[in-house]
Image (cartoon, rainbow, N blue to C red):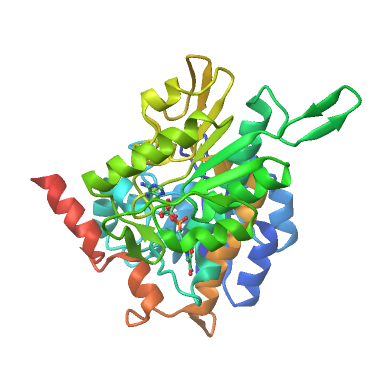
Length: 383
Ligand SMILES: NC(=O)c1ccc[n+]([C@@H]2O[C@H](COP(=O)([O-])OP(=O)(O)OC[C@H]3O[C@@H](n4cnc5c(N)ncnc54)[C@H](O)[C@@H]3O)[C@@H](O)[C@H]2O)c1
């Protein structure tokens, strides 16, 4: 079977779905691999690095995709008129990548119509067996790390406490909202830089995880559980939102840096930091809104831009993993390879829709949208 790896064409995307070292593993498993010329360039993997491990390089993306049994991509396939990757695929071909179906419903429909079997790595169930395939986790880890570095370079203070000949400077106070994968990495990174770190989440089970990476937990007594299973959170009731607002307001007002990472169901960002909360921060403080891809956790943030409100700098970077493309691509490649290897027999991918991982990740197959929630979202959009 042949894996096709095109260049990512979404604006600002610098990652590639498969880097050379991981390509070797797939070749050993029996796959042929073809990569579009220049596909790894922006991630730090030149064409020669692929050639050296026996990967074929192709100049024509349409030919590459037409010849692929499996399309490996970071983002959803393009459906633009000028580069309609879905129409280039053969019916029956497999797509494997971070499709984010709820953010790309038109692409989901196009994939179904083209009879593509699409697996979204972001919909993989959160089980121990699937952990090595989970692109959401590996990319969120990068966002949490990089988000804190962005805050540290923007802040007009040191992160660590320093005893200097000119006297002592106190550590910066960092508050992390949402302590999932990105949040825990943000806490750990801020802690390594010497800051005083506090964190909150609506799932009380994260208390110990926050403490284990050096953060202080600030909890919220909720009337209703916010856990939706699999580590995902539900939207809070109005009553619980009001309770949370009080705690956030008090904590944010005393913070030098706020890093937000909260998502509902791994997709949409609840608005948690209000304009009034930003107004209560001291001038020079910094907010890094890592929920920007899901619409933003902060009322005043503008996804993809940096704004200053009352002296507070609010960063809302989009696609943070793409800003560290070498390691992001390496980890992404390993996730895709782990998925393929788990289901490869005699050099061929075995479709097994009774397998819980394939079942969870399957979005389209045989002309239908098979993912129940994506189907519901499409039906809702049509009304
Ligand atoms: N294979 C696995 O077993 C596996 C894989 C990935 C994640 N997980 C688990 O799932 C957890 C969360 O994963 P994620 O980071 O992808 O989640 P996510 O990106 O969906 O959400 C990020 C965090 O935001 C929190 N959040 C949502 N609404 C909030 C609000 N109003 N206020 C404060 N916080 C809010 C969530 O509880 C979550 O911790 C992880 O910590 C991990 O324990 C398990």
